[in-house]
Image (tube, rainbow, N blue to C red; front, top):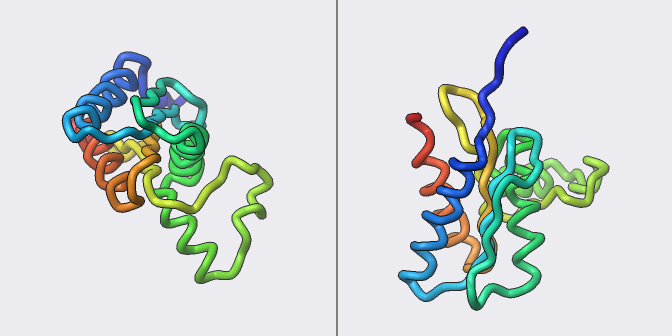
Amino acid sequence: MPERREIGHAEARALVAMVGDRLAAQGDGAAVAVVDAHGELVAFLRTDGCGLASINIAIHKAFTAARERVESSVLGERSRTEGFPITNFGDPRYVGWGGGVPIVVAGDVIGAIGVSGLPESADVELARWAAASLADT
């Protein structure tokens, strides 16, 4: 039976802390979610100043990236250009905003990270930066 590596709790907590430290240094408020390869929550942080809507959006961005194995913005772009509603997936947790990024290690998606609460480009940059920190492990 093939073995799959999935993100562990310690790794997920470290990613959340890493992003949290950077947010604190910048004085920004946001939500950060790390999910396993199935899109289920492993670690979460809501920093001071984070808007309430960003809580679920961060979790949903990570869910989308893990389930579809692409950045959440890719799904949003495909939805717009190919003309299908995201609701076609049958799960209201799918979103198309940027900021959900798969965590890929040795070619396998082991989880995903979602960031929400900043301008979309900043959410994307933080999520990519955090995901890349595990890429070579």
